[in-house]
Image (cartoon, rainbow, N blue to C red):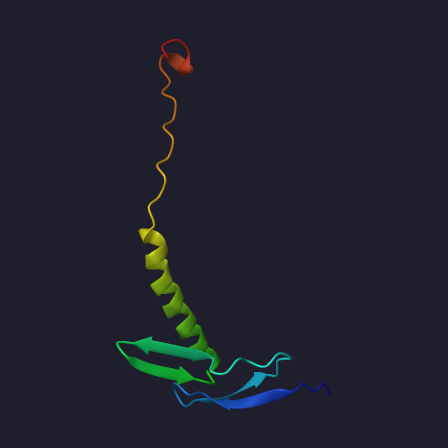
Length: 89
């Protein structure tokens, strides 16, 4: 019978208890630190579902910042004239 080492955590965000694979490198504590309008919240342990949700929220927030960067104008394509681009040019 195969064995594996797991840890049991209780999610600080949703209070779900689940087992997760034991990682060789310990997770930095806290796993998530958020400050918004002067209110600070820290989570040391997150379940897989909450970790995924937080990751998606983070990607969504940073995506807007990336889109706001000015984009370089694309070079104009050469206009072809005449039949099959031959002739007028």
